[in-house]
Picture 1 (tube, rainbow, N blue to C red):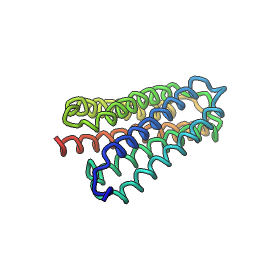
Picture 2 (picture 1 turned 90 degrees about the vertical axis):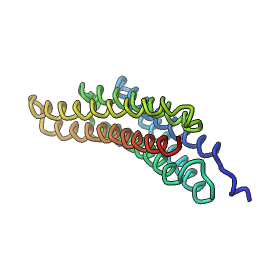
Picture 3 (picture 1 turned 45 degrees about the vertical axis):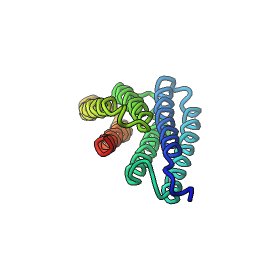
Picture 4 (picture 1 turned 180 degrees about the vertical axis):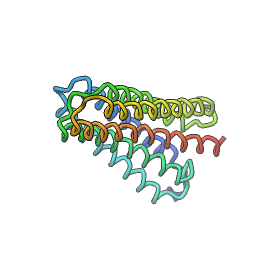
Length: 208
């Protein structure tokens, strides 16, 4: 009979915990970029954060399978959870490649993309925190989705500019390959932020 009761608090708490890991992973990446000497230490922190994020996602999926009545459509909860998990994976992948390719002196474009990513994930965290009171926070969440869309557009433009710059400047071809892939990972992470924003917008429009 317990399974017939909405598990609002459980799902919202888990989604908030997932958003916490997204923010944490982005801040770890930013710190690694600002302090290249600590990059190995930050990689270890990020691996731990990614593991925690995976466990939270698994907990959400298990709870979805065991709960008959959910506070939102189960596909919405699943989408929010898996996109946030993807975000952490992309962030981890970017730092992994910096270490693997020994690209520890980041180019300007990488720093700028990470700044945009940080802005996006903080807005995501704020929006996820608002989900338990969708009607009250409808306007704020909708404004946040527009902010993320604008940041994604800015990130997409910056990514294209920086890739073009790699080929325009007198850079070793190997370095071009390294940084193009790293920039792609960062841009993919920002794209996933917009995917999550679109999901959030669909959720609030559905439940207000």
